[in-house]
Image (cartoon, rainbow, N blue to C red; front, side, top):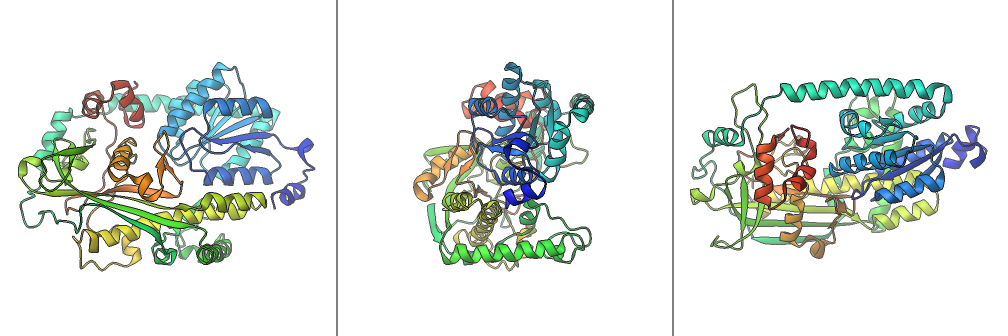
Length: 509
């Protein structure tokens, strides 16, 4: 249908294209649903789109720019290490003397990061694109010789103002020392020996693999809101969100049609067993020492096998509350209380590459993006189901829980499942410890890239904290004292730690 759209818009083939747009997901990153939608939308607007795929190293992108004589480059990324890859790419384009605009987008990107980190590295013009719907007008403006110069100047001025605000904000922000922050947590620490906070012993210690779980089991746990967001269908109040979106005057009919077609594909995927759901749950004897969570070989707790390192809030707060780290939610070793740490990996992506490849061969862009979007929703739904089973059965600390799916999506239950690389523990490298401890790749076939993205891409992972005191929070920015100590605790050199923690540093390294 892409070709039909192009011809309908007056295109006659390559000679008459609106410009050559090279698009790629950066090194170490595998998510490309948004990128694929951008590629299709640009193609429908007569751009010649060169999509060189996912996990693209810098040199591959540079070679492709030269080979295809690209007019514009677009970079996509989902995980925070991809931000550094985008900065590196901007520097490489500058070093090569390129003058073609660079567009960046994806869940991990922001206008502020683009202004502060990417734009200063490249003089050819850098623009953050929020979503696929913005890509076309931006690309069309950049290809208009009469508008391009003024447009890039306006963007550059806006980004310069944003940089000034950002650096002024860094100077104004106050931080506790890491020792002061820890003292607030100690003062507010729960008593793990009390009946309310005494840890519950899980049914087993070690791993349990859930292989080839029926898709029908997870359907009821799907959160459809992000699905509609992928397709950029957003209802207006009071019709925001699923299922109210179907009543929206502007997008309701389109949302209904999309949803019905999603159900048809889901049925096909189930009937023909095109996707496989694999999950892995692990429970381990654990206690904290400082801000670290120690994992023990067995219940004697004599032999430490692994250590999970946590990060603590330090940015000064306006309210009297402790400065948190995930280690606060596990009983200290000194308490003598036997506690546990859980973890999981869930994937709905086994078989997805083959399904997507078939649709691509058939030039069916809509279906391959639909398949990717559905696999993504199934992985998240599977993680929701697994967590419920953990609370009510495998760990059994909330056996009498009785929530409906809406309640689950609102996180009304006891316990949390934070993921490394996200606000409660912003360090993606902690996933490596999980993979080693649970032998994830061998057990269920999910691997990590060099940037700690998961393959297959439709995968979710995280840790289980069961205690009543556990809650989600945002670590926020951290100064050098914690970074230095964290690097020492992890056995990393300081510069390596800074690189992995770059999105949360309170200073310019």
